[in-house]
Image 1: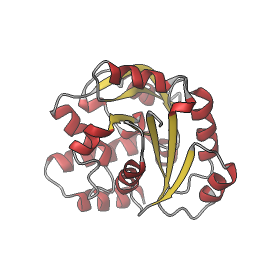
Image 2: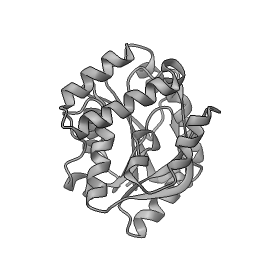
Image 3: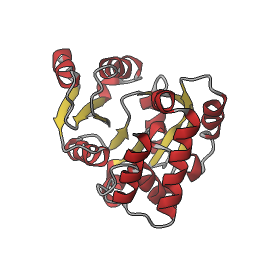
Image 4: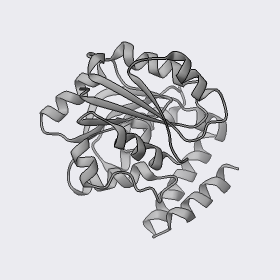
Length: 232
């Protein structure tokens, strides 16, 4: 039985998914202890056919309703591992990531992430990456990935499916509230593609506005409407 279940929510990730799957299997310390669930939310590109054509024994393709929270919860329901590892399709954890995660859990740390590095030379993104080494809630985000024991994930109710965006932060906030979070001091590398298409400071302003709106009590629907309009 696998120890770690990797859950990757995808929507139109044909450009990235095969590279990520190969990377995970080639860079795990003990790939035989992994299972991978790619949870598709209705891709209209070649994502699904690419995964099927790869025909990898450890990779399972699931179909769920669109929305990362729904997709990740659906993957968690199918997971056999005692540890869940949620990962974006454009994020690459460090070599032997499974060893580092398992080591933390064996030391009593039931949830956490890696520090992060954007694949960009922009000074602001370098600064933002530098801050992710600190174990502060303000320095967290879904791009850094998320490991959590399955028992703890179930105990806190998983991801809140009311949130189309910001679902990662809601779960992380719960973990910090119960004082259960660790930052592994190894770099996960993630794509800066959204910053490149939207502009670094525009996107940073959008994220800050979402944070403030939620702090002031905005509903999940209000946050989603604002995000869609801001990116248009």
